[in-house]
Length: 240
Image (tube, rainbow, N blue to C red; front, side, top):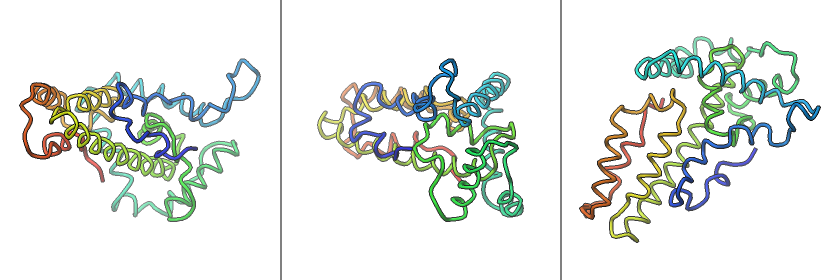
């Protein structure tokens, strides 16, 4: 697994389409060192599990509208923290995946160790869309502590991305006389490539807000204030 800071280049947001790359490693991170099944080499258990989770996610996303997806996400996330989690913590720490696969058993054990404050996150560097599959899967494949570990990694990656966005906004603000429309377009691309259950957690006005800001800043009517106050709120969603 590679560290997120090596995946997000120092100027990632300024290059066209680069924001999309956060969601374009769905296969490479898991199966990059494995050959296709037709070669006779076994695909990793995690890759197989994610393929099955993707099928379940596709079925869920096609059956729920945006509001229902948002409610589903909120309900799932509420299980990860607070009293709902603490009341069942002993059960979650003892939870073992329903599998005989040694790699998955080891991963689940590592996740439990990690969420209890020791060791490393087994999902460090996993692609964002794969993390989402683990977090919101209801197929019983992943333990609660695996989901919490995936959620922690998602948080770290999202915060790293936000920091780069802010840095790029400030760079373009200084170098392009206040025109930050290019980075706003990249943010739009980022939102457009989120899994539906992730996109549904943002305010439904995010697209119109970004479009208005793109038109505003590209017209040369930029404010003298730091642009963050008009843009950064659009990056925020519910986070526990």
